[in-house]
Image (tube, rainbow, N blue to C red; front, top):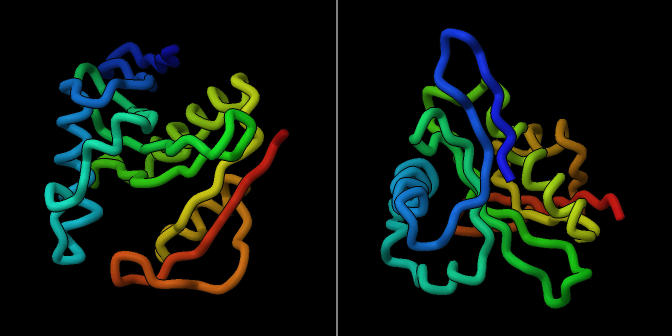
Length: 157
């Protein structure tokens, strides 16, 4: 399912699901490593990535280039909320609503499939972003990958 947004003078922005091991997946690994792991002194490629075969991968594409990504980890059952993680938007596209649109695209797909909601572990710096998207914090902050995170969730079903 694609959701193109067109401007007469700009390349087409689209949102779609992509496969583990695809070219888009390779682009996403580079983006996630650069934005989410390197600043913490970590390397994404040191992690066990083969488990991501079971995840769903969503991206925002400008022309043929991936500019934003997120992962959805299936719940215990088909009726369980999914775990959203590793949301990343290229620096030059941050603040333009692309991350918000990508999250909404993923939520709409899940809603259509009967998934009742999403939960996530938001970095302290991203809590406001998710609150604007309708997510609520639950409980106290905790450490993950060495920095404060908050458990947040959003339900619609």
